[in-house]
Amino acid sequence: MGNWVVIAEYYSDVSRTEFICRGLETKDQALKALRAALHTYVPTKHIVEKRRHVYRFADQETYLVVIKGKLTEWECTLRIAELVSDSADPAVAERARMDDGEAKVAGGPQDRTPPGC
Image 1 (cartoon, helix red, strand yellow):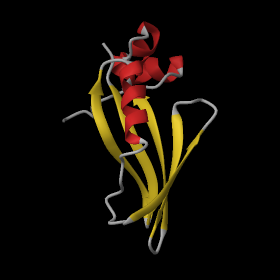
Image 2 (image 1 turned 180 degrees about the horizontal axis):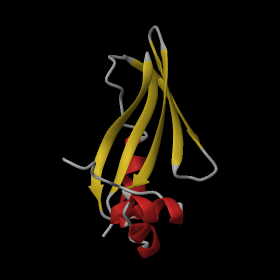
Image 3 (image 1 turned 45 degrees about the vertical axis):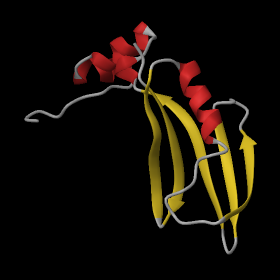
Image 4 (image 1 turned 135 degrees about the vertical axis):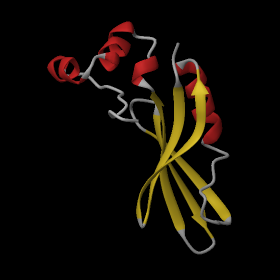
C-alpha cells in the first residue's frame, strides 16, 4: 500500500505543479527520490545553470531550490505527497473512501470520481 510522489511547484505566469516521480510505495522511497532530485531537477524552461542553492524547510520533507542562470534566477519547491486513498495509515485511507456525505461529516480528505464518469 502507499502511492507516494515527488512534486515540483513553481510559478511561471501561473502556479504549476510538476510530477517528478510517481508510484513510490513508501515514504522512505519518496524521501530518497526527493533528495536525489534536489541536485538533478531542472525546470522545463531552458536555463543554463551557473549555481544552485538548496534550502531545507523545518519538516525536512520540503525543499526550496534556487537556480541561478546566465540571465535569470528560478525558484521551485520540491516536496513529497501521498495519495490519501492508498495511504498506509488505515484511518486516512478509510476516510478517503467514504462517500460524499460521510467524508464531509468526518472532515477528512477524499478521492472521488464524479457521477457519470
